[in-house]
Length: 163
Ligand SMILES: [Mg+2]
Ligand SMILES: [Zn+2]
Image (cartoon, rainbow, N blue to C red; front, side, top):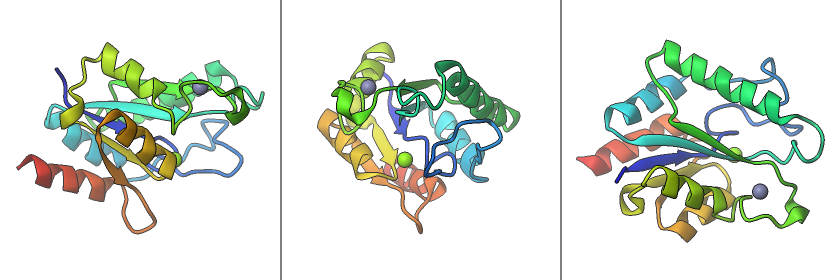
């Protein structure tokens, strides 16, 4: 069983844009992210991104482009000796009533099965209430990112809890 930190993407790993991150050029990864994720890697957490990307089914971006953006994040991390174990994304629009768009827990459920996640020892980190609800629904601990509290701070909280 694997303890895991689930991460929202936009607003946690990279800057959130009102009209979606559509290209590599628009992807602005926060400077503290590599170090924070490296800390999680070293504590033997699985690190899994769970992200809503309705821009796909709105026709604004392709699956291929989303995968390129995720590969770009991974390449950036690898250069800094950190890595993400997996990216899961929901492509649906809100009105499609899928099971995977947060606050629903479908992607978390899938990841928990595929990575044999020990939910009791795991965390969901996000900047939106829907991230927190999704984590609580599935039974992880949760941390909300805000203007004065970023991923680096959240990882410090996890480190303190692991002591
Ligand atoms: Mg977000
Ligand atoms: Zn979905």
